[in-house]
Image (cartoon, rainbow, N blue to C red; front, top):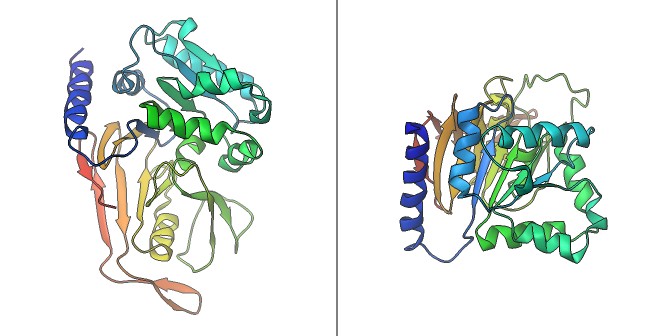
Length: 281
């Protein structure tokens, strides 16, 4: 109960601050680093979205190879927190098959939840559809866009695909900080100057994020650990969950020698649950 009250107070604080901010998206983001989603974290998401008893949740499972199973577990996390089944709609058809009515329903949702899986599969599914426009319209209308794992990676304009040019056989380990190695593609564009990495501490992805930061000076490279979320409203960010969020900023283009990346005066921050910070674009 205390955690829920804190979440509701945080929503009010952000609403007051937003009233004095420059025009921009009215909505918010709840970016989960993957792994288990504790009930308290799911409740934070529901409260910060301002769902209420009549708000609608849209579940997008396009990143998953098993969308039906993914939808079941995604729905259950909300139902276990008291959300009615009537408030939840899962999109199990291809985005290109969505009707105008369904796209309008997505645009009017209170909370859109993007499931985990493969971020490249999710972005490929949007091609030739109007779903991306519907997501941006929902965000502009005040919806929360939430996602976990692959659903976190797609949030930014520049997206880490998970692929490595020099070491195409994925092993889950990133043992080097090398130039022209980490593949970047287009994401949803909800975060213009931020690049997200997920499962960050648990899967030891610091080398990957450091590479991304060095090759994208001026961008905020942010790693979110499992069972942890970064809540975003405008330029205000807050950490929820059980672990940490890491932020790296490189002020200048890297030095490159024999394919190795170097840099100086990088800024690194490690934020704990409950920590807040701002990003200036």
